[in-house]
Length: 250
Ligand code: DC
Image 1 (cartoon, rainbow, N blue to C red):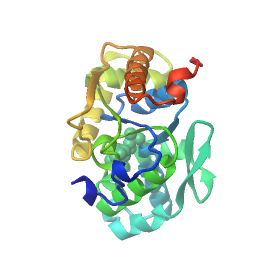
Image 2 (image 1 turned 90 degrees about the vertical axis):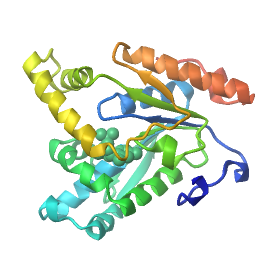
Image 3 (image 1 turned 30 degrees about the vertical axis):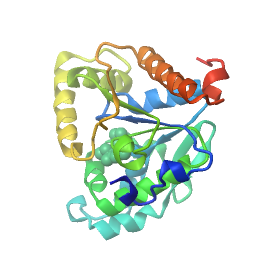
C-alpha cells in the first residue's frame, strides 16, 4: 500500500508537485549514466540511490569484521556517516563528509553491497535520504525500487533491461578501455547473473513502467527515448517545466 510506505506523501497533499522520472533495472543496465544524461538534458537533478547503498557498505567495511557477521544494527549505525552533497545537477555520496567515489565503486564494495541492500532498516534509511534529496526539485532517480517503493507516484517510470552478455561487454569496455575477449565477457556475464540473482527481490518493475530493452540501442538512443517520454508527460500536464523550453546541452 502506498500510504504505508515510510516517508511517502500522497500526491494530492503535495502543494507544488515536482516531476519524478524513476529509472529502475538490473546491474550494468546503464541506469546511472543514462539517468545522469537524461537529467542534464531535462535540466533536472539526478539522484543515484545505489551510491547510498555503496557508501554505507564502504563505511561498514572500514569499520572491520567479516561481512558474513555484519549485523543489521551495525550497518545502520554507520549509515549515519553517509550523506549526499548537492553538486551541479546531482549529488555525490560522502562518508564522514568526504567524497568516497573511488572507494564506493571498487570491487570489494560491489561484492558486499547486496547483503547491505537486503536489510530493511537500511532500505528505509536510504529511501528517506533519497526522498529528502529529491524534495523540491524535478528529479531523475535511478535504482531498483524507485518506481515501486520510493516514488510509487512518479509521473514517468522506466525499467531498463539488456541481455546479460551485452551488459557484461559494456561494463568491460568501460573498465578496460579496450575490446574484451569472449572469455572475459563470459566470465563477467557469470558474475553479473549472480549479482542479478542476489538483487532480484529488490529489483521490481512497476506495473506502469515503460520497459526499454537497450541490448540493441546506443546510449544516446536510450537517452532520447526517455527524454521524449518525459517531454510527453510534461506537455500533457501543461507544465511550464525546463523540459519544454531548454536547449539540449549534449
Ligand atoms: O546500481 P548499483 O550497482 O550501484 O547498486 C548497488 C547495490 O544497491 C546493488 O546491490 C543493488 C542495490 N540497490 C537497491 O537494492 N535498491 C536501489 N534502489 C538501488 C540499489
